[in-house]
Length: 103
Image 1 (spheres, helix red, strand yellow):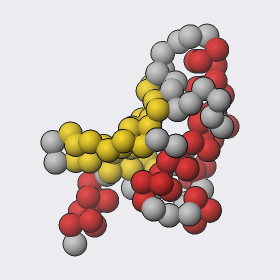
Image 2 (cartoon, helix red, strand yellow; image 1 turned 120 degrees about the horizontal axis):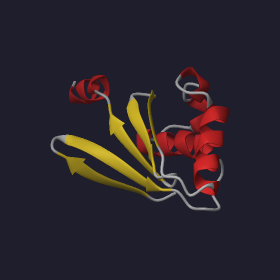
Image 3 (cartoon, helix red, strand yellow; image 1 turned 180 degrees about the vertical axis):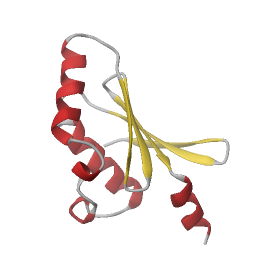
Image 4 (cartoon, one colour; image 1 turned 90 degrees about the horizontal axis):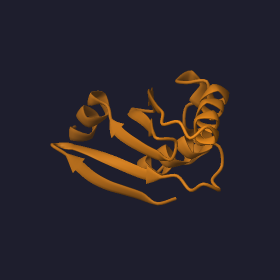
């Protein structure tokens, strides 16, 4: 998975381009957050505590099949996760995550 980090003001933003042959969007989200936080994906909170993984996968798959642009935003494991245009993810740390990093 290719994750690029840049800054938007004082906030680091992580960008992931999702490969067409990639696993489900829900799996990519969990694996991406695990990479960004340097944690084992198995140790992260379940994604379903933030968003319904099946609904996320179906929504993104339908948008891709119908060539419809979509954007979905939700919070997961201290990050705002944005699915943009079916094939791009952005991970933006929440204020709580940023404050904890400063301590």
